[in-house]
Length: 317
Image 1 (cartoon, rainbow, N blue to C red):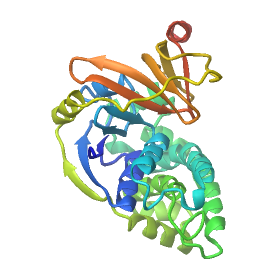
Image 2: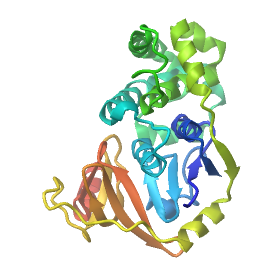
Image 3: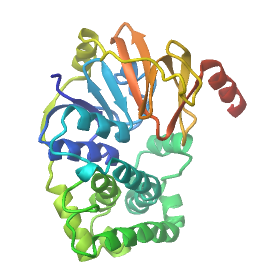
Image 4: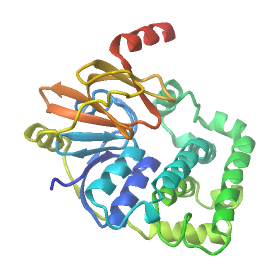
């Protein structure tokens, strides 16, 4: 079986989620370091233009978004599970809650403290892509709001742990723990003691964070970006079936499509290979990687005809 290859950067909180999943499952994996902000010229050939980080590569299959990365790791390496008790849906919903409600305000608290050291190129990129200003001035302006937002979410975490359970949905770690952990890891890693002053880290939450951190990152070994591209070029994507006849997209295998995320205007173009209840897969080909399949979760992403994406882009311009 091909080793997992993670395209990421060490400061990425979403990368930390996946690294902890590797640790939980005791996996050996290859690490391709990417720039913190685009352009990422060594990753784009694999992803058909998907610009976020991290990305998981296994042979000639490329998995985007941590929700789908977790599901694929679970499929290939089922033990120990990320979904104890079969709680896939509950873990996914809790993960979405943590990722969407906590990350940006937590990151903004961090940049209110360390913002002077954040490169202006990074700030400009995030304004354009995420429509959020992480400059120190903007982060200080909104510090009171963001402290309230994160504190409210931390209250929910504390409530879930109040009965003495070691992890959020019971006795075993789950994908939900890794998702709820990474925003708090990010702010404590960057803001240090100041984070503990600004946010209500109660003893139960801190003990839970220590248990999650103890998972480690598995066995990591470096890999050059050119080597990762060569691995894709030498492999073939996993064979997949076509699109369900009653798929809500109304599309069929072989259609030229664009994949759109719910929270950004960043369409990724390709040829539809399959779409089912869990994922959308497109075919992408170029001389650097040959033929690859790029996978996206259904949750948070939609497939639309290529022409419709062009029209939407023109309207947004």
